[in-house]
Length: 70
Image (cartoon, rainbow, N blue to C red; front, side, top):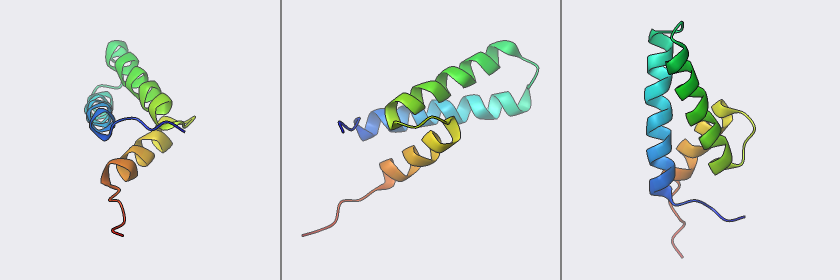
């Protein structure tokens, strides 16, 4: 599987978390909800997951993953 650049994943994860906070603060705002869902979908595509929460968790692990020293 082709993996995305960690910097790209980190950027999208940061956006997802920002929209998540806004959505929790203003749940009735449809524009915020739409942007939150769009960023979640983008993370799903990047991480190969079907659920935004799983994609965000996988992104956290992926960007913190340090390769083993040989």
